[in-house]
Image 1 (cartoon, rainbow, N blue to C red):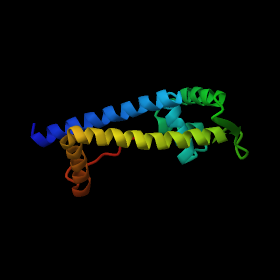
Image 2: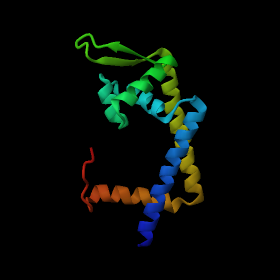
Image 3: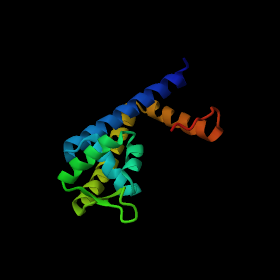
Length: 150
């Protein structure tokens, strides 16, 4: 294995760790599970019109999605409403409190994750820089074929 491959692999592992640490910080700071946080952000940005679309974005079952929605309703962060055009579907909306919390979460993630990356770069920049450079290089030069994963 070449030095670049090692740096790429280690960079990937370190970024994964930084994502996990950021999610843990959100859980601690906002008292929300990772799935609750992700669901709020999906509703905030994508405004999906069905629970199935939310499930697909989260890569979890509609049943689990419904449970998460119920938890967030109890916390007064969102509400569901029957779709007036098709009563078989429910629309999901953030409450005012949900909008404020989700906006704060996004800001917190931006700040926390960027700080974690900067701290990591200060310690051993070559791993994350090498990872980033190789990803950009692979995408722009099409060195390796990409497969769409659904």
